[in-house]
Structure formats: structure tokens, C-alpha cells
Length: 295
Image: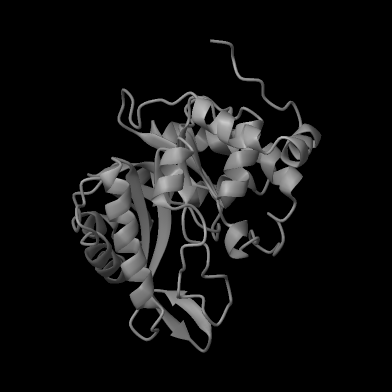
């Protein structure tokens, strides 16, 4: 069987999108897959679904991720680093990288709900506006990821919980991973605030891990907080640690990840902005450091 022909640059991606859009599905179905977990049972996943929710900021730059050409080049560098297992992304980014051939042999999670736009009055109603379970299966992906923010003071939480439970059930029926990212949240003067205490993260896990008709294919994606030992005592589910927007020095961030990665049930990292936009601009070096922590 001949090897699929991929776009060589972003100009060619744009041309394919305009003239041969059917190539996206063709290349997706032909994409070379791998087992979810290989020998060491660890996963290092690069995340890039932030812009789809209007969250382009990194540190003090509110539009850091807005330049798509730059973002895709940074992702290509990151995905090429040995030890990087795959990508978590929205459909637009996954399809661009598929056309570029950057996802061959990688684990790929499709982002399912991006409707809770950052700063919107409806932010906590995290509608499913991206992939659904059928599309994840059709596009030959490995699973779906969704944000589930639980706010007792916002009615948008109820449809979010219902949709999250449905997504878990529909993915499980296809034997696909449901990667759920829960937060215990509140609406404070129109601003969404997450409870990042150990107690807050444990409560979010308790609710999230009970959703769906079965939890056999559910994974968790949770933040690294103080007292992670207590947090991880609340679950037996495979767990990936999320990076978030960096607020400390790279050295402090990496040290925190290293300690948390040693805990039971923690399988690896899914990190985006911290690695794609490091302070010194060296994406490859930042990703290599993260890989060394995971493995």
C-alpha cells in the first residue's frame, strides 16, 4: 500500500483545504495508529485546544496563541521530540497537523466542548461544540477530551454534567477514551474562579468519575496543586496532569510535576502553553525536559 502524500508546508495546507477538502477525512482514516500505552505505560501529550475557547493568552501576552502559523510550527517541533506520545487538540488544529503528516504514529485526543468561551456570560455552560463520539471514531482518533466545570452557583453546570455523562457513555460504547477535565468552580462577579485546593480538586474528581453508564474508559485530566498525595487518594482512574498557564519559573514548574508524576494512578502529562511558549523560546528544550520527567 503506498504511503499517503502529506502537505509539505502551510501554504499547501490552505490549498488542500480550498480544493480538496475530502483529503482531510482520507488522511485521517489512513493515519497510522499505535497502542494508547506502550512499554512504560506513560503518556506525554501536547495540548493545543485553547484558542477554540477564546483563550489565546500565555503569561502577559493575551494573544500569544493567535498566530496559527506560529502555533503549528511550535506544535510540529514539539511532536517531533522523541518520547512525545501525541496531541490533544480541536478539530481545526488536528486536521492541519494531519495534512502536514505530524500525527503519524501518535495518540490523538479530540477536544469536544469549547462552547464555554473565556469571559462569556455563559462560560460555565460548557456546550459540546466540537467533536462528538461518532466523529472521533470516524476520524480515527483515540479518544475525546472535555472540560467539566462544576459550579453550584451557576445553572450552566447541569447541562454540562449531562452532556459530559453522555459523552463518556458514547465514547465507552466505541471503546474510546473519555478524558475528562473537572474543576470545582464558582462565578465571582462575572469571573470564573477554580478552587485549586486539594479539597476542591477532590470534590471535582468525585463528581466527574461517577458520570456515565460505565467508567471503564474514563481518564482524568487534573491540575497539579498542593497536597497531591491526598488528591490522588481520591481515584483509581488513569490520570494525566495538566500544565495550565505558567505562573512560576520553568524550574519550579518542572519540580512540581516531577513530584506529582511519582504518585499512583498518574500516567503522565498533557501540557500546552508551558511547553509551546517557554520564556526562552526554546520549545524543543522545554519539551525534552517534560519528556524526561514523564519517562
